[in-house]
Length: 182
Image 1 (cartoon, rainbow, N blue to C red):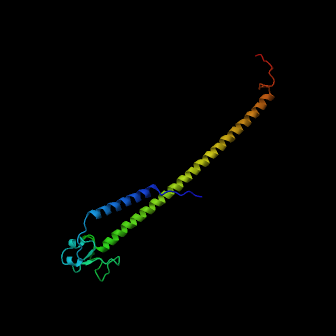
Image 2 (cartoon, helix red, strand yellow):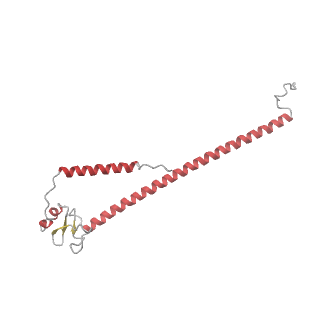
Image 3 (cartoon, one colour):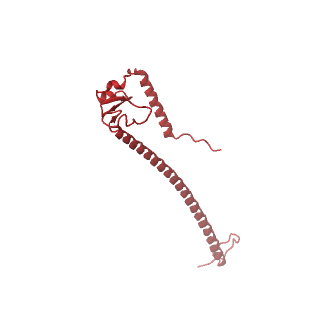
């Protein structure tokens, strides 16, 4: 049975960081009393900045009106206000640019995560391949060393036979040997 692998350390850190951020937001929400909610239409014919102080409002530049953001649909319908004239969150960027910017940022994040994952997988596979290659080289090196020792032993036996044949080898069996004068 395969052992259960724990979550990666970076993922645990990310979860801890997210938990701390949520706890911090909850603490801020509990300490700051909510502002009395005003209807968005009360900010019509005023300024965009005043309208967008309330996050549930949408400012339309075509007729300078502040309207409730249509939360049932993600994007405000064009009958309500065109995307190029709608402002939400900040007055200096229109809704079209905001959507494009958010899509680009989300795309960059996804691409960077994908690249990081692919790079990590490639490195892991490559390091595994290098370990296998090192192990294979070590085995071949050991085989060559053993073959070399075997050939060396065979050569020594052959040379000893030749020395014995010509009387150049001292036999341990025969302690008496011929003494030569020079």
